[in-house]
Length: 439
Image (cartoon, rainbow, N blue to C red):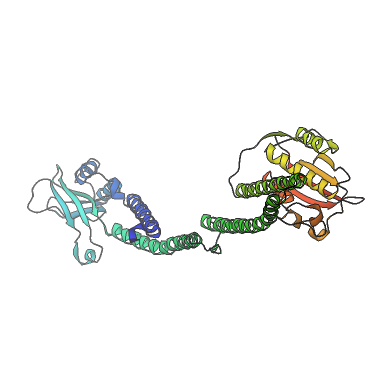
């Protein structure tokens, strides 16, 4: 990448341009404020104004000096006799009129040079006009054209600009260096290194961007790990029904008895239905993981009471519910309740589960209770993991271990949570809390 394409170079040039602009404007304003000659009229007009208030030539020199001092203002003036001998001076130093002129004339851009004492003073360029008065006296008035003071001010402004530029360079370079580190992290993540992270320093927008990148990289790693685990577990779970189907087909070809063939067909249909359910749950789990990563479908108003009544009627389970409405996905919420009911019937086949919908502290709380063998305390969180089945009951109860995992994901998709707790008198209660909203 060429130098002028680098971000730090552009930022630094922008800082330098801003410093130069501010310095020029400040210098101009300061020079106007410090140089009173900017507001003094041209030398010929100044001379005419002063001449209008001067006393006559017969007035004492002290009176002429006082009048000159009162009229000169921020410029400079000197009064001379007809023989060009000084009478009075006020303000800036002014040279005598030219000897070769007998009438008013300009002494433009003359240098200050009035003997040894004056030579020690700073030199400056003057705009001077010599006005010959009616009584023969000479009035020389003028103003400064260029003083040394603006040059000194300009030097200090240049020095200040250079210092600011040198100070701005490490700031711009530090900012862009952090962006370059972030770019390297993105490149490493793009090459497949899921452990790539960037250092987070400071509390500014770049630090927030680095923290967001680390969070995104962590989330991507978690999603890929979950997908790998899901694929591995799904492959394992698919082997059993596929092996049964293969065996049933071989027996079906060998066994010619109608009753035996009908039994094998029923087993085949059951295995196919199990495969279909497993594939459907795997696809739904993957879709919910993708939605958790940010690709969310829109919600719609859902009547939880009506939905629960339909599912409880299908499962012959008693329902105790308030009238509750939330914003959500009705198909996912129906799947959540159906999975909980199927799980309760699987582990407690002799007793129908009990279902309660209640509002609690701004949450819609669903409780599905059964009289099964219960869940050990150490496993109450793990049963919501994909393909995990509690020890001692998984083999007898069946299932592939995705039902409760889907319950947890659907609850999280709606901004809620799913927990498991023991039921008083034996059994288990599964509690799902969903935020109430304008449903």
